Length: 215
Image (cartoon, rainbow, N blue to C red):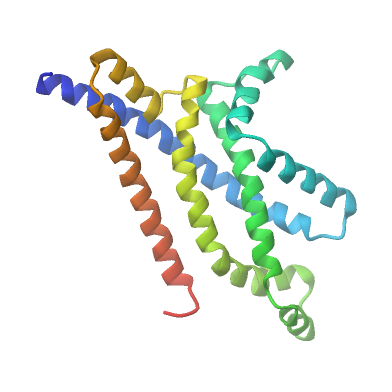
């Protein structure tokens, strides 16, 4: 294989990394705020809202992400809802990961000692002020490690998007392997995932250090 072809193949696979990163960024940007909002909803006293959110997290954590992708991309058109592969992937990933983030934030909020609420009440703060100024800042520090784990898993899960014809890393790699019968491109794809994962890990290590209790 000539050097020119190798550059072309490498560039083609890297173009899949751009697509994967688009899905990744969209998921992080939308699912984390949704997870925080839903977590607060699960801690409310509104029973219908609680039941709705319980059903939501049970459904999307209890079924495979790949099945959800198939339903959004191949199933929803039967009901007149059609998405491009990229939009279908983003919508599915946001909904799926928001369910996981909901439970992470819920656990983080509930881990705060009840004395914090009592102290805030003694200072004259209402519930909204207590959550915004006291509870959420503390819980955010505690949920950074599990959020980091999910963030690493997310970039690997983008490989599932190849099942709905989205030209991400794995799909482009498979295409080049079957075209040139060169298995080395799988190693190249693995390096791409490892580099992206390393960046994510370093970002969350920085966040842990910056917002940790002990520095």
